[in-house]
Image 1: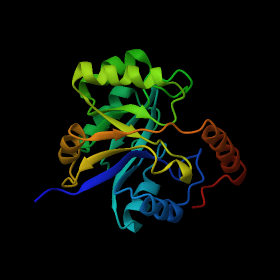
Image 2: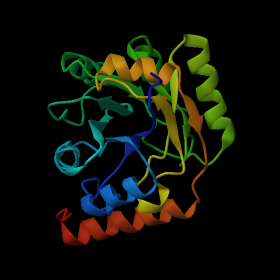
Image 3: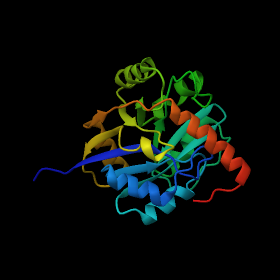
Length: 225
């Protein structure tokens, strides 16, 4: 019997990130509307929002975190405990692996974002990387994604397409299409390896929305989702 096909987005933010105002309930409604079958919540330096969405959502949710290390961002998937910011990249990767999670390289080579993993750090952790974002909808230049895709192909690491959404409108336009998997890290890796990428670049205006969200959170001094 043929497996069902899933649309998955492995890089999604909620209002628990300081640069997003996406409420949890509206996120869940939007995912159902655009037929996303599985998402990874990867808020900055917290898994609180991810755990809450996992509890509420009627679809599969992977608990993740976008971790700010001393040398840039790394994503961990299938986490059970938060990983503190400020670790070295190697320490962050060790922590992810100790939780039997997956290491994802987010938006490599993007020259606009200050949070991109630095070249030497990227080189050091690539032997431990499980996935590379070969298309991030928030990247401004196609050459950035081309370079990430070339790296993934050279090293034999699977690539994924992600929205990196911080607003509701970004969801459902960019995702990875895979066969149904068993919910485990190994199952996801195998499915992504044989999946296909659906790619649509986000408007530059989404960055303005994130800037506004940062200002809003600073004024409120608390995340209210």
